[in-house]
Image (tube, rainbow over all chains, first blue to last red; front, side, top):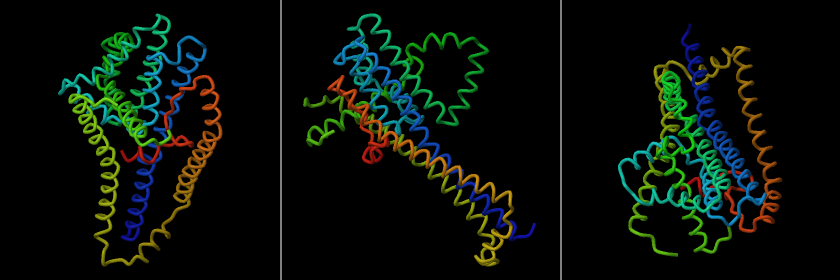
Amino acid sequence: MTSTENVSGVLHIALGLVALWLLFFKFTREYREDALRDRLFGVRDKLFDFAASGKIAFDEPAYGRLRSTINSSIRFAHRITFSRLVFGIVYRITTRNECAAAFVRQWRVALDRLAPEQRAEMERLNTELAVTLVRHILTGSPLMMIFFALFAVWAFLTGTVRRIAEAFSDLSVLMPGLDLLEAQVVQSDQLERNRLDEEHVPA
Amino acid sequence: MAKPSKEELRYRLHCRIVDMVGSAIQVLVPWGSAVAIAYFVYLSLRSLVGHYTFADIGLSFLGDFKISEGLAYIFGTGGVVYGVKQKKLRERNIERTAGRIKDYETAIDPNRTSSRLTPQGRTRPEDKKR
């Protein structure tokens, strides 16, 4: 191979790498955000249909809270990343702040007001929201996917799968940082709404 | 609006720090990769400085172009154009139909809250910055 052919080869590889960079960091990232939003809109539609059928009041705190969490997650879908989850977990482990726990407690209080069938449906939709977010986070990080594949093999071999399926009704047990991630997007949304209210900017 | 407690302010600060670290990683990974690619190309081409002109390199690049490579480039570019056009089509569809859904839902629930995306379903520019 002559030297000019080498140059040509290098340029082909460079072009290929730039194309791959665009594919992973621009197109795939945008697609994943849109796909997450699409799935979250699906959960929100189910919640709305449940209330529209008269099974729960629109002004019920649990309904308002879940809808608000879904809305905030849709709005800040671009912020729901593996690195934020990791730092959320680190934060939960290293600090004992009551405000983070209050977010989960308020949800529990709102659920306690409901009839059993209402509560079951709200918990199911909340789990669907959490599963959607976790799936998005897990599939977004190559490191996490390798870890998850190894974990899946280990869980299969040791029979942990059944126990995990049982624990899935409360994902905060499995993902202690997830509630913080949700609280974070809700808080950002709330702060922005307060700012708009103060400035009298129409929503 | 009630003044937030000291603990709540600390919590907000911690959330902001977590958010900023997350944002920094989100920026560092792609741009770090871009710098790595640029550095790789620079190292590869540095040895050729003084030996070849841009014309030599350009002619070599175009001259060595094989039909199979050309087809691969056309296929890749075509895929990107197809994807972008599909995305635009979907955004136009969202813009056309989302308003109606909003109106119907607001008729049932006048206090309906929104996700505050743009009419095309994109992230608002001010939300991207923060």
